[in-house]
Amino acid sequence: MAKAYHEALHPLGNLGIQVSMAALENTHIPAHWHEAMEILFCLNGSVRIHIEHEHLTLQRNQLIVFDSKEVHSIHSDSKLYMFLCIHVDKKQLSVYCPNLELYHIKCRPVSLDDSKSTQYIHLCQLAHDLTRTNVENKNTSAMRSDGTALLMLADLIRYFSVYSLPGTTTGTGQSNDILRKIISYVNEHYTEKLSLEEVANQVGFSREYFCRFFKQHMGITFLRYLNEVRISHAGRILMNTDKSISEVMQESGFTNQTIFNRLFKEIYGMTPRQARNSYAENTYS
Image (cartoon, rainbow, N blue to C red; front, side):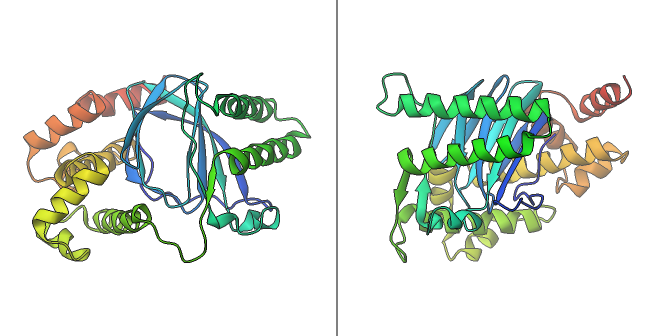
């Protein structure tokens, strides 16, 4: 149903690049981040993304970059969402580009009349070539895969990056640090009865300022985010265990069955029982 919020990546290769293809059902991934930079190329359907105050839609054959530790969330209305995913260890790749960690890469879908449309289209074409290389799985696929990924990174650094001097801390950077702290705390304590005051204290904010800060930077209220995290965990438990709906609800931090069912259906488009039956049918069909 969804991935972990702070994803633990498989070991990266000698170049610090990992290329993978994945398919997710009923994709709903609450705000999270990666230590590695992530390039996401949409292979089918479309997804809604929230990143740095922006709400945007990623369509088929478009790509987006989430820089290292950049908080983002992903939501899809498609029953099956497929994508090419590239994770990059910027520190490891500094052998090719010194101080790569000081380059902030920002690449979003652009319109045809945008000044960087040519470069963006070329990036998407490289991502398409990379997808085909991984599908073919020939003896030379690993070499071609790494080579194409390096070409993409070179273009991202050249056309879609901003260099920041060491020690420079922007307002956005400070806000992201606070958001990561909040997200980490929620993921450690989502099964407990969390209050706004408790979480606000973790970052030294008053209750009122915390509510404004969170809504401003995340686009949703803290309570909504907390419930999304809990529902996402509930989805994974339903999919991977045979625990009762009541047990799933309690292990996800909910105490009210009606609220749990309503939120689950609102986010996944089906009730918990329907979700379990659907997964069982797909597994044994």
